[in-house]
Length: 546
Ligand code: IMP
Ligand code: MG
Image 1 (spheres, protein in one colour):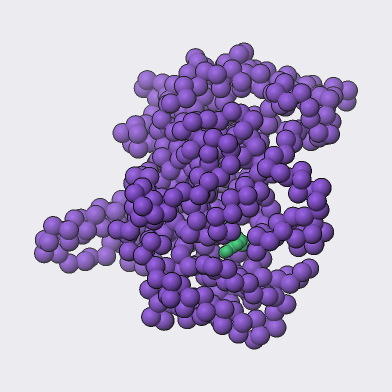
Image 2 (image 1 turned 120 degrees about the vertical axis):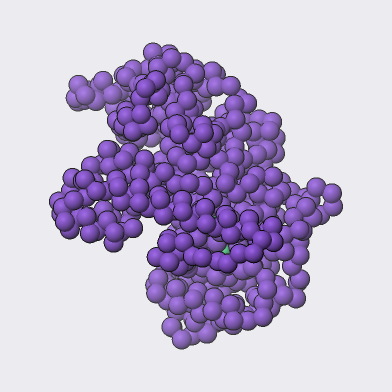
């Protein structure tokens, strides 16, 4: 895509031909999907058929599966309208911009599906104009009669409200007085009325409204929901979007490589801020129980309970997740322990040789279903050394007789071989929960061939983000495109709201209600090592950036 767009850029024709180029990509994908469907249908009906590669397959032999259409032109136009990329004279459209456009196309596709594909997915707001409670200056665009998709999307993108400034300076609201400019003061007024309105919007939301969008959203953990090696502590914006998704019937699953068997408290610690948010907002019933975590890629399934703690989902017997997914050949219910041991033995030997050959200051840890190559305290392993270790064991396992699904990946600071992978994790969830691939979405940060989100590409549509901030943006866009009232989505760090609900705030004005024995852990000066799940002295943990 990048090189095709480069031609137009060099000829200074991107402004006039960019959208057509994206239409061309769309045509190639549509043709590819049609030919693939036809071929698969013929096979399933035992018709005589021969495989003819599509034009797209010939151009990109490694092309994956498209579970939905991709309205690329629409996404490009919206993105370009916002950022004016085709007006640039010196900098061509970049890889990251193409990634953003593809992400946008994917989420438009998943919300459009419910409106016959032709509409924009902008449902009428619950309250006319979205001006709930008199919130200043915020409008919700509803596609008007006679308005084309392009006009409507332009109107929608031009309404993007500048994100509210994080409350990061003073705790008493005085950041809005004193040396503030008129612009800041008017923003502050707007912020206040929005935060009052937001609670009203919540009370107006019909809890059971099914979101016209993905039914199952799987999230990677590290670097998608929280920074690498850190925990989900205070991120009210992201927590609010996840909360709204659950309230609108979406099932959420954190599908993470981090595996601590069924030691629920360790997963709870990593998600402490999020679970505390759910508790504070009084999430209950089914909404609560649609929150899952799949630890160790696909090895340990836990679910949120009414006590806001995670509980192991039954594996075997009637209704057990392993039992009910045995029809899938790769399901953990079908693995043999001796094969698991062979994978781990090979991984350990290979990591040892990589470590020795590359003089890595690292150590190896072995768990029940994984082997990790992790840096020694205060050391860093280079990306090249980790990639070498990963590609080495990948090729050894690929060339072995082993039939189990596995994942050898570079986690950024470490390298791992897990038995199982996110392909199996997402597929088990789809089968266990009865959600088809085209209604599932996986959001993650590791989509290179040495990353562990890569495997999910073959079972559902994916969105490739690079940070928790990008995840927040994607969720906000899904909610907006699906028609959740704008007032409920904007301004999640609702300062006034926090003040009212809790009556107490920390110095930065952001409530920090720590739950799940966090305080106890802190006072006992212990923290969890995210690699091993062991509790270690706080100082050592901090020096490792965990
Ligand atoms: P993810 O991005 O949420 O999939 O988490 C990947 C990170 O989890 C790795 O980079 C490791 O730092 C951490 N981790 C902890 N335990 C394990 C394990 O058993 N297997 C793989 N990664 C693990
Ligand atoms: Mg990750």
